[in-house]
Amino acid sequence: MMYGYARVSTRHQNLDRQLKALEDYGVNPRAIQVDKYTGTTLHREGLDTLRQMLRFGDILVIKEIDRLGRNKDETMSLILELIEKGIDIVVLDSAVFQMYIENLKKDNKSFTDKLIQAQLKGVIEIMLLLAEEERNKIVKRTAEGRAKAMEKGVKFGADNKIKGEQLEKLKKDIELFNQRQMKQVDILKKYNITKPTFKKYRDMM
Image 1: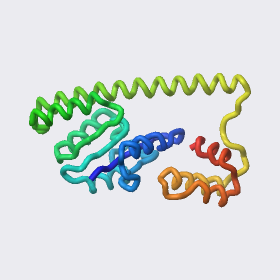
Image 2: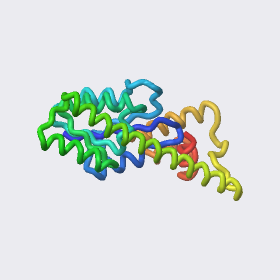
Image 3: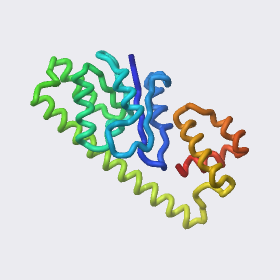
């Protein structure tokens, strides 16, 4: 069985890019677990559910290796746990990781071997450092682009059409939309807003 996992950790991110990549790879949307704004612990509803579902021989697909954890130790611990249980991990954005894992399997290397674990930790650490560097570049480019747009008079954020309790309800419905539990058309009708306005509110979260 093939499963997918996607995670974002701030209100300014959405899951679309990760979900599309997983589905393009061939993961059934119903087999994808997601987490959003999950604090600082390893225990996340989507991930916890996924760990209970995974069995020996299953495949777990993620877009980026740092989606599994929010720090190096957490990510390493979970990857080693899954590999030792016989779960194949596919990291779409890292051919290096895939080649390394496949070579170990081809050579019948034991993932419980201390030397193999040390080597694997080194590979993961390098990947996480590269991922962090790329995130920092994206944040910098986004900030620079936003600053230039503001200089030209572009305004960001949604209008004040929806306020107070109604706005809180909209936020919850957008969360359901992001988790594919609610349709955009239903939200537009419920709050009598247009697609551009919906996008503005969603981008604020």
